[in-house]
Image (cartoon, rainbow, N blue to C red):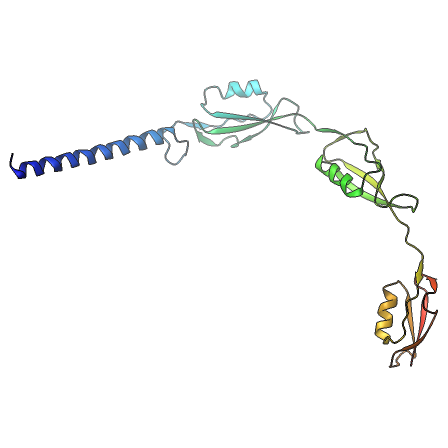
Length: 240
């Protein structure tokens, strides 16, 4: 066979392979489009979603029997919808989707009731976190009492064991120490007037500087260093 004839045969084979590749790709695209639920290019039939709100699961399944949708059922607490009834759907009613697309249908479990745990004696932060994790609102009031370990739950209102709806508020009473009414006067010797005022302010004491506009450093004070006085007691500072 002449060389030219063999060359034509090779080209024909290559052309046939190319045509088969194109045909295979077209078939693959056709299959993919047939399976896709993307509304932009899917060949699947359109489905207008009905409103399922208030239906039982059985009624909703009947309403969707011929829709050809992939149903995903979820149970959620909803105090506004009786238990066993549809309370939400996604996508929403009235939307147009493709057969085979997922439709999430949420069925109400009714209101969520929570039994208030006994938190007495627990650390404040742990108790508040436990209540919030259960979906309860929290308010805190303090009880000043040096006979109780500080920042511990003393009581709750309502009391432990009460049944509450999710979102209801619980008042938590927490202990905290009574502030010591006495302060120790610091040693102000050698300080400037500004430094002495700052040192006294840190201990809830009041500085009265003499002379009021004087310069220099503290040479004496009244009460003296280490004297115990009540908070906000005036301390006379004499500059020299």
